[in-house]
Length: 335
Ligand code: UT7
Image (cartoon, rainbow, N blue to C red; front, top):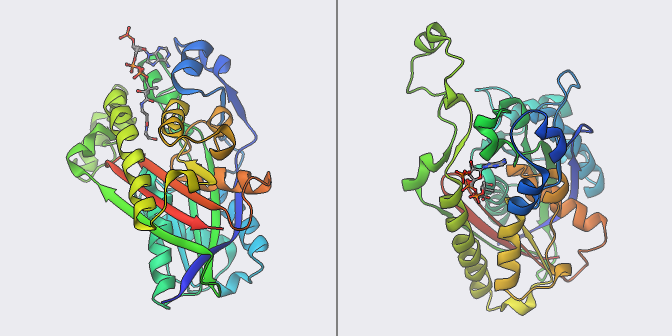
């Protein structure tokens, strides 16, 4: 069996910064409420006409990741694109990245696992590398939330949380036995499928009927979240799946050098930090600046942490995510 390791990382967020105070002009909310409940101070939103889409932001992050990995783009054997906000209903965004990067015929596939999408994609890529099928895999997590949020008081429980952005990594076959991905752990619990969902654009409804209804009050086109249920499940599942990874590798929480949690809510990250007895330096958070970028959040945070010199060779890096599905997962990496 081969091992895989991350050889390059990149990120991109739109320039357009939306502060909590900017949101107060659109809905009944306050900087204090958002900060206290979520830790978020601002987020980035695509500006209409700035050329950014889920796929094109993914392309920008990918170009950086590919350059840092030192491989030629034509050496990419597979593109995995994690998102809940693809450019099109079909085809997926992976093939759009392929077109933009001008990579002729490698396979490209989208992973629809929301907040856990990047971990699911990383785990999928790891399996392909372990078996020897592929050597270099481009993994992207990217979201355009802002175009699909209800930016009125009606949608404030959801819309203040989410931001746009993309992260990408190149995962390559490793020649080292010691470094690279140690293990990944994935879970889903479909009984909660509708508790964090966007059900409007659905094949359960006939398109001609939806178009004929032309109903501006149809909130099914906006995301729905049972916030408290999601929060309660998140803190439990985050803890479990991190512990599962540590146990599989006969490790204990004090061996974690850097935890990079999906940036769902700073209060969730702080709960996990406390539970595992980690210091502020051992947990990387950037939700304060970007909000929750769903599949983009882990690769964005990992890229920033690495750029800031917070991830060093030999470190045990733990990634963990929870979100819609419900789905959750973790990855343990020896850097
Ligand atoms: O990445 C995917 C995973 N997602 C998560 O992990 C999110 C998990 N959930 C959460 O982070 C929290 O549930 C939220 C931050 C979304 C909401 O916090 P909460 O403490 O659960 O608030 P709530 O929904 O129970 O609402 C409390 C009050 C309500 O008012 P009343 O009924 O008490 O009068 C809401 O209407 O706060 C009100 N509210 C707001 N007020 C000001 C809801 N959203 C806002 C808002 N600004 N943006």
